[in-house]
Image (cartoon, rainbow, N blue to C red; front, top):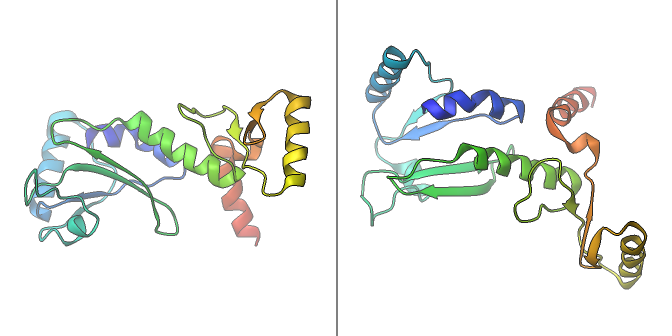
Length: 183
């Protein structure tokens, strides 16, 4: 919780909201959130849902009966604004979450959505994206010509392009909000 609170600004910058879910009671949440504050001065910056009966946790497959029937495995779900689960990270009880990878994954999903392309293995923000494969033979020929001219691919099925500037970073998120207001 402390690490996510420290990273909350980065999540907000990429138009992402954090939400905690725990099978502990609301009173228990209040106690440990207060204890964290008393010991560290850090106020948890996002809501935590009490899922005492585990209905939500079980529905999303967060409780592993092989580990425990009541303890959640340390899962992270990335859910988009249409309520679709886009990625799931499942961490064992004894392994901490890796927040930079979670942030990178959110950015990769946003980039792929914005460009209609894909991100390659080990992609990091501001790197080229993979252009979707051609659907027709005519498009294939144009793609081969494009690759030969720009030297930016392996073959018609794997070529790259720089992402549109509007898809990079915070500016895109703010631009999207402004565009929605204008519509």
